[in-house]
Image 1 (tube, helix red, strand yellow):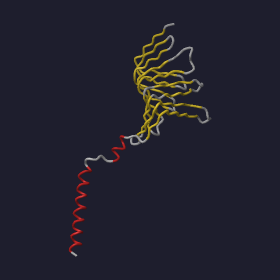
Image 2 (cartoon, rainbow, N blue to C red):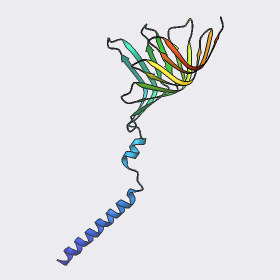
Image 3 (cartoon, one colour):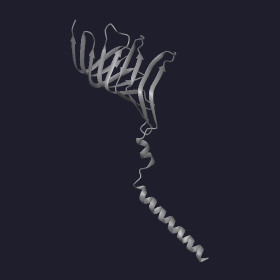
Length: 184
């Protein structure tokens, strides 16, 4: 009978020792959610995404060299994204950048680094819009930035700070410090 009590007492002491060790080491190991918040849940290479309108016509094509999704922040990052979109007249536009990101369940694409916008079909008068960052709303098809913008065509150079570009209406509004140079 005494051996049973001794075995029970040893088991109790051993269990309390394990609880103390567990509590002591818990402070040194980050929680699982902290580790997960920094790690992506999937990677992709050679991304190609096509978006169609309600009539079945091609609306947008999105291409990226690589993508990484972070579930905790609900964010996807892209390497060298390229967006090709059509306006209401059927004119095709291409937007390129070094990097981009999009939030889950959001229609906003945020581009950074050597952002360029150009029409795909206009070889006669090549237009080039350049800036450092750009946000593009795929629902309203409006691109905007608060950074310096340079627009270059065959005879015109426009420099400004801040821009709103409505691709469907083919209209650009500049915010401030607009400087235009036209050479006939």
